Length: 100
Image (cartoon, rainbow, N blue to C red; front, side, top):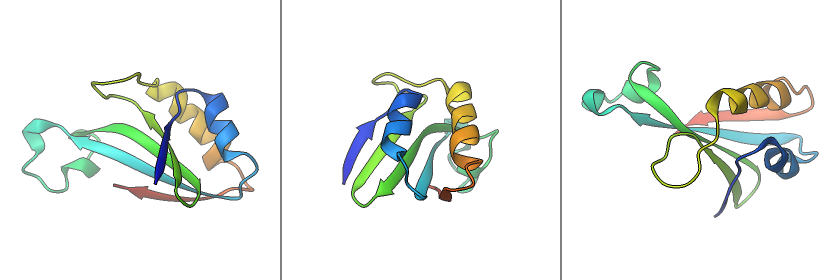
């Protein structure tokens, strides 16, 4: 598996290209005080979205990180707006979403 980091809309658009199928993975981190609750990572008040991954081809994934301690983080609000407008509302693109 090959992972590439994407921090701007141009990198995301370049990777997606003219694909018609995309998988989108949501990576979440449970806030420490709720770690004993096995479903806490599904609760927006008990977890943080740490990143989102995309794949349009087998073996290659791009990753956008939002709140990691190491490396550069993307702005969540701007990135989510981009995802909504250009991916989720794209009538040509089929998107399979999963939460890790």
